[in-house]
Image 1 (cartoon, rainbow, N blue to C red):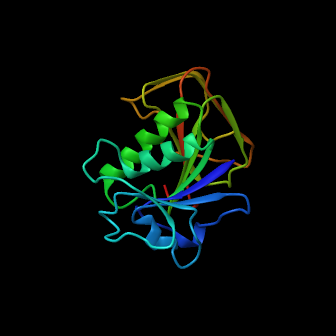
Image 2: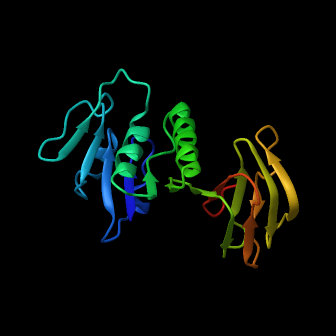
Image 3: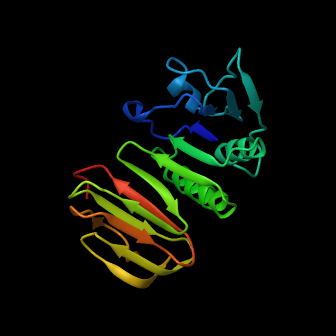
Length: 203
């Protein structure tokens, strides 16, 4: 089952889409972005950013004095309902600290076996726990990062290839690679990679 979250960061309406069986959740200010185009199943947050409590919807309200972000609470709430595949809009952009918090939160849930993808204005991001094969558009840039250490990393079919390499969180070896006209294969034997794919023309 897939759950779509709309958070309060920078929203790209031209990229927003939901499928028939998706469950839509608005997270605090994210409700403002979709209220006129789609009806969320739940609205989650402390509503300090939105500034009001939506009416006529199932609202999960939290005290603004808390140790968890609204995104964390929304992911936990939907995970408890059995969802393990998430797409997040509005998770990047806006305040840098919120962007970093959302990436850290996603990483924690990926370690628990969840699948999380971010769709942002100028990029998309997801986590690789084993391997991924892509047919990326030639000239489009992508980067790989890790939080701790990723071992046995292979990149095949890209402009810059590596084999059985180690990525760490203090050296951005995987930044700014480029798709070619070949099939790109990324794999990791131990650890988790964050893959960020930029829109065409953005280095």
